[in-house]
Image (cartoon, rainbow, N blue to C red; front, side, top):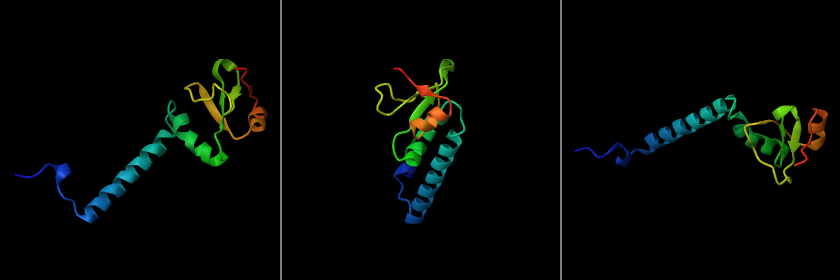
Length: 102
């Protein structure tokens, strides 16, 4: 009787190959998710944290308001209505956004 697949002893070479394939699959899924409209903002957020060196400013065009929130705002957080990230308030203002009154 053979043991289940998950409990079989894998050789070191097989384990390394399996881990490499899993990492490639995860990376591929992440890259594809950057282009899916509903979730692309959520998956690109960490990239902007790295790019800016801090949490980015989140901008939204919901209801044609063209507003943004800063990381120190109590309403800071991602939603499906957000459209862009900026590193500075000046950058957001240059692109036609104004600070959200909330």
